[in-house]
Length: 455
Image 1 (cartoon, rainbow, N blue to C red):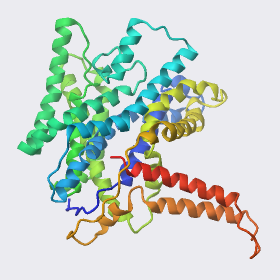
Image 2 (cartoon, helix red, strand yellow):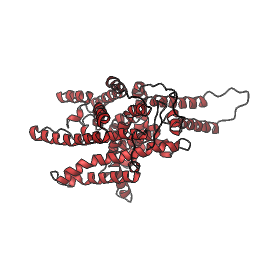
Image 3 (cartoon, rainbow, N blue to C red):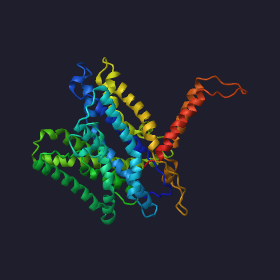
Image 4 (cartoon, one colour):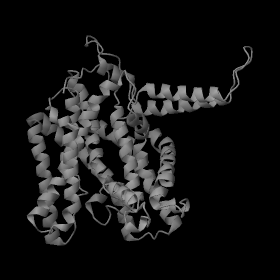
């Protein structure tokens, strides 16, 4: 990968936003869709519906894409400073203050909503376990106990993993600076092996099930790949071309998915089962690592040409993907109120659950996430830096691009003009429809401005 000269402090990659937005919606469908054959019709649509169910049943693997993107974004500040010729200064206290302010308040609000909804619908007895469960979630340690990992919400364990990987980031930085990426990745792999052994020993000695798939240690390697990707993007390190080859990425992801599908049929105590279980997460991580490498470089071709439809569709959703992730199970829990019994279950997912989730998540983003986002002032170009290149223009414009907002405004104005009567030259401008369009566009601009400040 070629060097990316850096003169601006603010950068947002639309491709990563699109991947986040698409993956969040895929996760919604995964949790909302009934995968059993009973949900398929007994007619000629049986096999098409089963194919849709089979495809959605593998959507959980996008969790590993989130881990790669997380490593990319968290390491971005360090990589940007190093690429600009500065000594990176990542301070523990400031880092955690920013992470806490950005992520914890919406998480706390979401937990409160889940508990309130549970108390309202089925009742909630405040037992000793419930108190323990809530405390473990508030401390983001619930992934250390199989009884609490999936209790309040089935996806909150991934947020605990993220927080623990943020804590491990400073150790990863130390090893990376002192010994380089080869040693760092080796340590990450050993952490995966070590946690698997520790979990097995704890089970044999105490009978306590220390979770493995839900632990941060086993996902450290995948997360570190994201940090490597951002260094390659800025030209700090050079990666071979195959690390951004989508064909190899697809092969790795498919192989890991095949292993995962057939793993339950392999004897649990056999070497084949253990080896296959060890490989699937790193294979998914490597596949998505290659996808991220490819898409961040593809940003260059989107500077002066029309955005790919995939990017323009899902990048705006990526802006509030955290809110989708936090709240989608709330909507799934209540979806029975709006589903049409005459429709197939998978049809209800697409026509009812998914749109309702998006609307609710955007409202949650607006009132519960946006107020806690970190504002960041734009930094002028560094004196004596290289001339502004295509990548610098990309960084300067901010991502998602303001071009998307311009297109949004233009289309609104065109639609309004089509349905309006041409005013007289001396008539006052209309304040109704045009004003509404302007306010809507400005609202979207505000959300972009806020999102541009987050890391």
